Image (cartoon, rainbow, N blue to C red; front, side, top):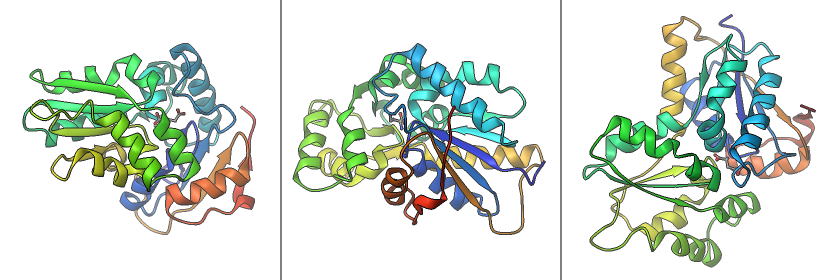
Length: 269
Ligand code: DGL
């Protein structure tokens, strides 16, 4: 079973920022990444719809005999993780909310933590809950910043438009005298906009995302169950539910390595 691949799923290309961290932490592993591009965005949809989509995508990935499933989408993790675990009970299912909350609690001194995410993630309350479970003194300020998803997909990640949107969302959160002292990028698209976000919040606020902590969680899980692969160079396989060309073009920036459109397989869920 240790030879089996790790399944990674997101609503689109955003989860490739998590895959990047997974490859760095686990270079010998094979990964199968599924982007549900036909149904993106998840972030504006109801919890019931997101959960239904996420379960379908997870069941489709599980059929590739994965040894572990990473839900590399905050929205799906926030509202669908329980349903996914019920349906895919053969392998460990790891979401990105708990690792993100863990990273934030580690860096925040004051306990006032800012979280930006999609509408559905904010509405689901999973970050607020996961942070407060770790730190009962925490005060969590959350804001839905849905336009960041579109900007990242369009590749408009720096320059005046990206900066204006970052200020639009973040100025009201980072008020002098009452600002969070850590900011969680609670959507896998947002690391692409870190430069613009950094400019809006200033130099001193730590910005954390789930990618590295999720990779560490997966690593620990595989070690614990003796399923880690130690030797060789891992392979990547990409599946998308729509638009392999667009997946390859936009995904290349997210993954920071070239994805050929011909290497993206179109799948139906
Ligand atoms: N990548 C998704 C997330 O992490 C957001 C994109 C979407 O709205 O589907 O929440």
